[in-house]
Image (cartoon, rainbow, N blue to C red):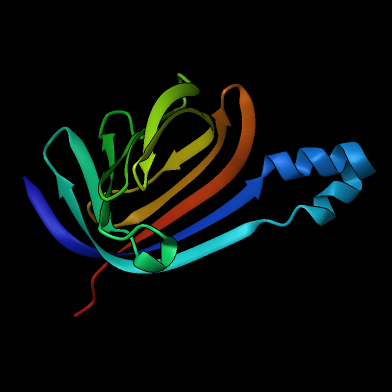
Length: 164
């Protein structure tokens, strides 16, 4: 097994689809794009990348500023299927998400502040170019709760080797 410390930069662009849908019905789809603002979240942090021969795992601590204190996120993907990704959160907030190019809609579990919920993630696209040397992950997905599409997230991670 190979493991090393890296630096990652995460950017998440979140669109509230419920607000967009409501605005589109009230004022028309073109104007709704201007009304429904995206939330952009960016952070940089240290992480660990690990290769166990079959999988690459990128692990980092979430920040308190992001509303996830005492939470660790692991992004795990099989080396022979880099466009299948498992996101596992442990600690105060727990989750298990599966993103895939082949099975686009996946049932997942999420537990935030003691409130468990079941939801679906619908993978729109995934482009994973992460290796032990660094790289990028671009993920575009929609969250669906009880059959209603509530949120679109364009999530990207850049992995860089630590400079000494």
